[in-house]
Image 1: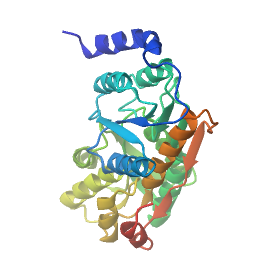
Image 2 (image 1 turned 45 degrees about the horizontal axis):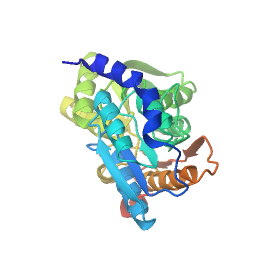
Image 3 (image 1 turned 90 degrees about the horizontal axis):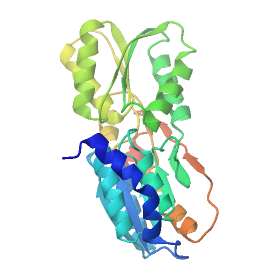
Image 4 (image 1 turned 30 degrees about the vertical axis):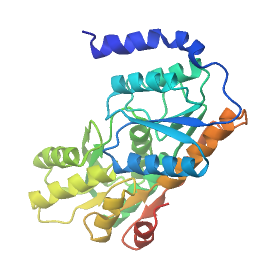
Length: 312
C-alpha cells in the first residue's frame, strides 16, 4: 500500500508525462475543473456556488471536486479532472503540502490554472485571485486593538500553517500590532483546518495559561466563533474583544448579535465570477494579470446588515 508521501512523490514524478493528455488549449472554454480545498467551509462553498452559477450563465460546464482538506486526495482528483478534458482548472489548494503538484500537473497538460484564495509556493498558477489579506488583517487588528484601548494581553488562533491566508494574515496583523507596544501577544496556536471546534479547543488551551487575555484574534470567522464559545465558558469576568476574518454568512449574523466584534468580509461571489472570466480569457489566449487582489470590508455591527442581505 502506498503511503501518503510515496503517493505524492509518485504523482509528482508523472507530471511531465501528462503533457500528452490534453494537447493545446482550445480557443473557447467549454468545460472547467474546480478543485476545492474543503466544502465544509462556508467560504469555499460560496466560491463554488458563484463559479457554478456564473459558468452556467456563460454556457460552461463545471466539474467540481472536494478534497476535504487532504492534499493527496486533491492530487488524485486533479489528475482525474485532466482525463475529463477540462479546458481550465480553478484551483484552491487543500494545504501547503504538495500544493505545487496539481498546478504542475495541469500546466504540463497545457491547461491554464487559476488559483483562488491560496497560491502554490514555487509553482503559481497563471493568475492568483484572492483578498488582499495583508491589508485587511492589518485593518482588523488595528480596529480590535483600538477597541481594547491599545493595551492588554492578546492571543492568536491561526489558520492552517503555511497556507497563503495564514501567512498573509499573520503578516498584516503583525504590522498593526507593531503600533501598539502595550499589547502583548502571550500565546499563539495553529489550527489544522480552520474549523470552529478547533477555535474552541485552542482558545480553551490558551486561556488556561493566560486568563487575563483581553483580545483574541481568530484568522477565520469559524475560529473566532469557536473562540467566543471558549471565552463564554471560561467566564473570565472581564470583556474580551474577539476578531475574525472572512465574512461567512453564519458569522455575519453572529456578529450582528454581538457574539464577536469585527471581521473582514471577503468578496467570495466576486472572486468566483472573476475566476470564471479569467479562465475564459486564458483559454482564448488573452492576457490576465498574474495577481488579482480584492479588497475586503472591515465589518462591525454598524455595517453588517448590508452583507447579510447581499453578500459581495
